[in-house]
Image (cartoon, rainbow, N blue to C red; front, side, top):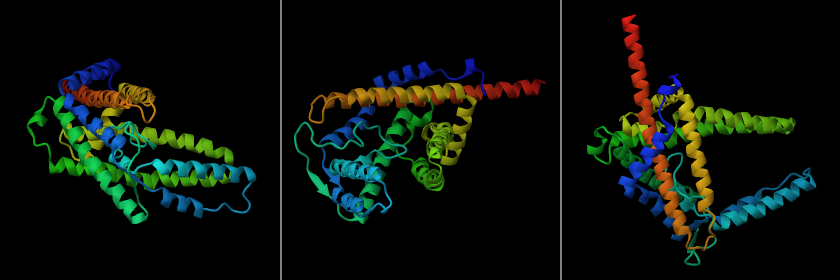
Length: 325
């Protein structure tokens, strides 16, 4: 691990992120356009499909009265949520995507009044729509990250084409590997905890607590993988390993930076969601969220650039001292 005083500067990264966005205001158009579409655009819903699926699930005869009452409440809440939830939310692709304030908000109305709804009835159609919207969101997020890399990097990123096949392939691998990791690690772990919890109820809370800690421990070191794909023209595997090593060597500052970034984003999102669904003040929320989100994202690029420079300098000095010895 690098000495604390030689690790990247957290507040310098946030200041640099602000300076970058102030000089490249077009970057905030990505989240603004997405949120405006989610606020005023057509809504693609699956309420009938979900209602049928929920109704088919029947509790066993041995279920207690409290369990039955809880299930009935959950059914009502679920149906109400999916009545207004729109599949267009998947334009905010995961785990990398354009920041969005309204991505999973089930709007009942908007400042213009009533929505136009499109109801999907077939599971196949739902899957294709989710896949298509996720791919569209992923492509636009690719352009956003690449433009931010251009704006923050001092290297030759700025003179390259905006679309580069090698980096696009690495970009697409991020959600694919994330899905595989979820299916092979997270879901089985959750199933195991649930099975053991059925025999030992106290184990459920403990198990999920340690699972959460394990996931955070595994994911935090690789959060800069998307940045390095563009900044240093790395493949997905190279960016993943480099992000892991860099964060491990700057663990104190990297963890603090990520914590502050998530905290600021969470607290400001609470502020932006204060206006009701039909208030025109939501337009102020859209702009405010876009500005803060892109500043934080740009700051993360500056932070990893500083971190990589610190690691290189430390490694070179260490090698020089070894040669002299």
